[in-house]
Amino acid sequence: MNTLDPRHSAQTPTPPPHGGQGAVVGGAPAGAFDPWRYRDDVGVEGANLAGYKVEATDGGIGKIDSASDETDSSYLIVDTGPWIFGKKVMLPAGVVNHVDHDAEKVYVDRGKDQIKDSPEYDETTGTDPAYRDTLGGYYGGTYGAPVPPIAPGRII
Image (cartoon, rainbow, N blue to C red):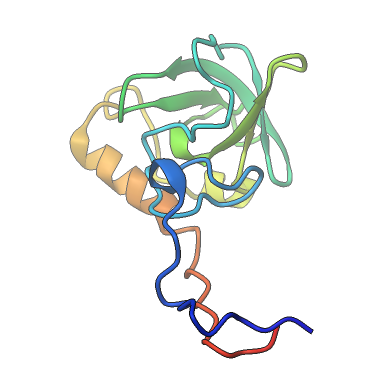
């Protein structure tokens, strides 16, 4: 049976490195979600992702038409093909879990319905700050509430 060290307060956890981005591979990022920045460990550095397939948590959603790796403004434009009637969607870089360059696939930590229900993208609004704020807020709001800290002395 493990107990918490009473000298350590669960109320003051050690902050994750790099602001939490990329702290958890395959899951939601620890710390503050930054929709417009790739997590540190996804494997995007210097890669051209155009043409890669995109996998949501519950299956494929399409192919990347274009990708941006601009500092604090990165995103993917995904052609969904017949999945949602040939629409394109903009995915902020923060939803990318990891990239498999051998298979040419980008994995995102959202389901198809979350992506389909995202604010509608068109090429004229993609750079509009209001649209980007709305889109970033939509994806940031889909992570759910943070797990509460464990109370000191609680047996786990």
